[in-house]
Image (cartoon, rainbow, N blue to C red; front, side, top):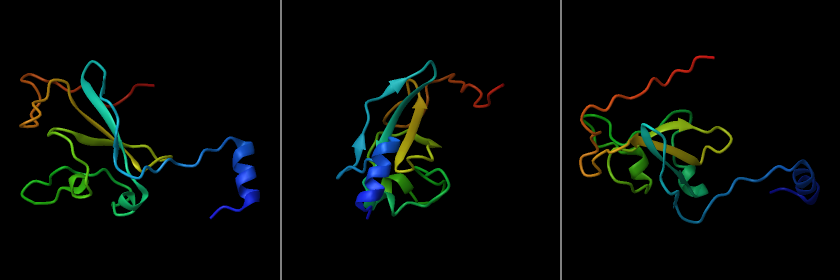
Length: 120
């Protein structure tokens, strides 16, 4: 628990404490040319149950493991946890191909994902 001196330092440096909601929060969807995105903010107790240092799966082939669904995240099919934002690891970043069938989770026919590599 921070004391009054540490709180004063945090305020003077403009550091914000992470926002942990009481319930799982879902953002609106937002898009680029290829994907639709959303982020999910987890309560502290839910976040503490997650594995660390890797992306979470929806389903592991030939298994009943549903990592992000097992902690209560509810979304239609096709969403993938695609990136970790280290300053706020309790915020899960999801994406799926634009036009994905929410019943099957399959992308539209002919969807070609852009390269995820960047040229600097």
